[in-house]
Image (cartoon, rainbow, N blue to C red; front, side):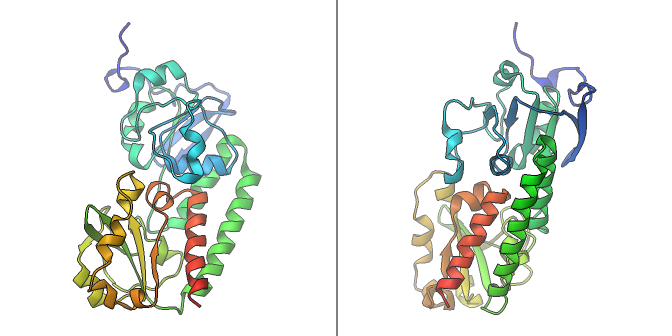
Length: 301
């Protein structure tokens, strides 16, 4: 029998038809009743995967084939692929018979369809309150799997490490966050997808009023020279998505950028592209990002 896509079906969402023995979870797209002990969990969000690994929760299936270094275990064929982060494989999902599906970020748009297959929860993120979002998502997923104690330890460690970093960044000059892709550059400020550098890590802004749109604000080398940041935080999107590495370094290595304080003081930080671009909202990733920034500030003392 041909499988019918859930968006064409007239069935009641599985989240509403869940077994009585469950718990109600509030998430990014409402509330869902989930089983007390989910065992066949399918994850369509790398941020959720990062958090679940930190909580020592294993999963049944994943989406896509691109994972940052700390999530390489999920490249193994023992984790069936359920489509991509953007487009689920509905036939694979039907065969997997999941008792919980997790969406977020790139897959959030498919939440409605997926919720018709099994109870589904969505992991939201906010650039404005980045660390608060990481903590809230960690607590939410911990409550689903009975990992509250593990979550408390992770959260306490994150809060302390961020507070320590703020002591280092507050008086060490202003910074600019730049994403490079295809030879083009965009800048990101507080409240943006990479706003954690300013909003939570405490790096003062070299440029105020940058747009908080998903793609940032298009800039040039002349812009960087004019704003003259003390610190330049660089995200190489091409490296994060498996394209040619080193493009960001080539784009920035020019006469104009070399005139900045950041370049002359060797304070250009190429952030880990995987943890920054792919899984930035995961509790492991944001801790790794924090540690990289802290290391750069320590070395520059």
